[in-house]
Image (tube, rainbow, N blue to C red; front, side, top):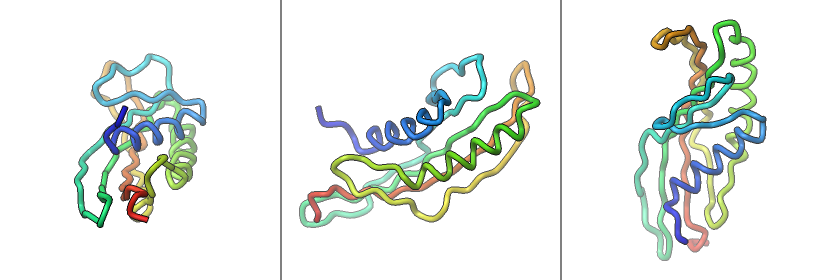
Length: 133
C-alpha cells in the first residue's frame, strides 16, 4: 500500500512521542481523560519541487502537549524532550530534515470544563523521495 508522504511523517512523529510513554491523538479525535497527552496536527503541506525522479515536500505540524492545571513543569519538561526527538524523525524511502528549530510557546487553556496547560510546538519538515539520490 502506498501511503501519502504526510501520513508517513505524521506516523513517525507520533511514534517518537509515544516512545516517551505519552499517548497521541489527532485534532479530530477526542482527547483521553488521562493526562498528559499530545495532540498532533498537520497545519499545511505542499509539493515544493520536482527532481529528475522524485518529489520534494514541505510540511508544518503543530503538537500540543496538554497537562493538567498543576502540570506546568511536567508539560514543559515533556515539550523539550519532544522537541529533541523531533530532530530524529525518519521515514523509510525519504530523506527527512527539519527546517529550523521547532518553536515552543505556552498557554493556559480554559476553553474546556477544566483548566489545562498547553505547550505548543511548531515544526517544519522537508521530505525528498530517496529515488532522487
